[in-house]
Image 1 (cartoon, rainbow, N blue to C red):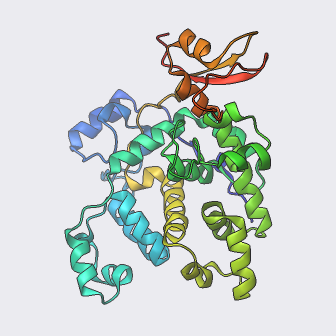
Image 2 (cartoon, rainbow, N blue to C red):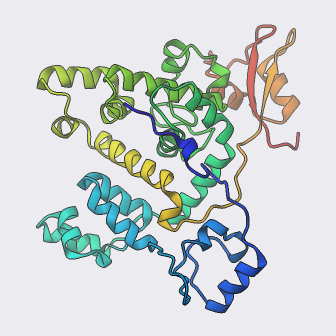
Length: 345
């Protein structure tokens, strides 16, 4: 596949072009234009240039975020369109009839339910974008070492897997920003256990997805499906069905995997065209702090926990250390231990 060149865009996560001048803001106030995005002080010159400012000399076209969304719903497949609607908190009853039919066909019961149901909160998208902005340096590093992924695809991976939560742990024990399993992290990706809840998780997760894309000869959808339900599952399915067409294969995969592929595609689209959906950019949120503690002679987990005011069993859990009969193990000299840190210890 050909990787999008994110450098061609004016900004990635959380960045703004130069702030509008006072004269431009005065003009905006005089015309009493409605803003779609952050409060007035955050409006940029590039944003003002897109407003429908009409004078005797010039008319600058502007596509309303809602109209842009409708155009995208027409462009994408049904499953991705549904996830766009969910993520953007679109009111189903406001959709044109043809789009309602596209999303739900002639299933009147499902359509009636959809009109009454409220979906995702756009505020969650704004917070996610701000968290990704705080992680932008490491996301860019991940992109630089990738052959197939750009920053937006990596951002959608982080968003879908953990909501950009460094300490996220799933029911299946998947960990951190991109949710690799501990065995995948240490054996397949060759990383140290203590790194799994650090930003290095982003580098490793992107590396794994990038490798999957290569395995499936550039097919991002198959790679995403394999990331969710396992490469063995997808390879066996391809061998059985004699096809690599995701649209033909997806009905044989778990519902979770089908939604996962569609949701990450929708999230990638939103992050790539963030401003066009009328979403404001909040102040970037810095990732949580942590300490990489190098073990000295005779130090146990309880000693390290006492140093930083953190429960030693929690430290063991974050470092993939298996406890034997609730014992407090003495660690190897020079071993690195991850310790979550709130800055107060």
